[in-house]
Image (cartoon, rainbow, N blue to C red; front, top):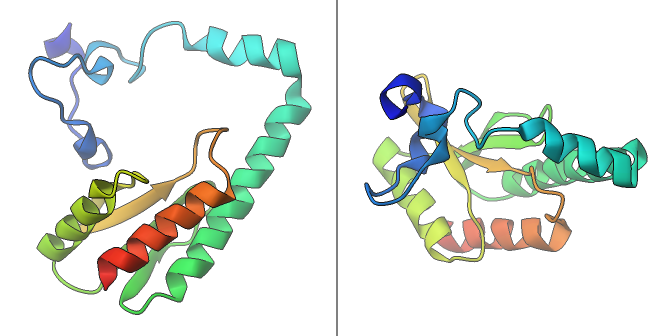
Length: 150
C-alpha cells in the first residue's frame, strides 16, 4: 500500500514521521483515512450548512487579519495574499534561516505552521482549517512569529 500511494510534494514535507509511526498520507489516494464523506455528511445533517458558512467566514477573516499582522513585522514578506485560508510568507534571508524560523515557531508548542517550497525558496504557511481555531489561536501564532523573529 505504501509504495502504491506514497507521494512526495513540497506541501507535504512537514508530515515526515519516524518509521514506527503510521502516516495515513502514505496509505490512501485521498491523503487521509478512508470514508471522508461521512465526516462531511454527518455534521451537515446535524448542524446544517449555516454553521459551516459561519466557520468558513470566520477563517477567511482570520486569514486576512493574520496577513495584515504579518505585514507589520519587520523582515517578513507576504508571498501570497490569502485567497482562502492559507497565508504564505517568509522572512527576508536564506532558506536555512526560514527553516530555522519554522523550527523556532513550532518549538513553542503553542502553534504549528507548515512550509512549502516555491521557486526554490522555503515559504512558511499559516493554514486555518480547523473549526476549533479562533482569533486567540491566531494571535498566539502571530506572537510566536514575532518572538522568533527577534
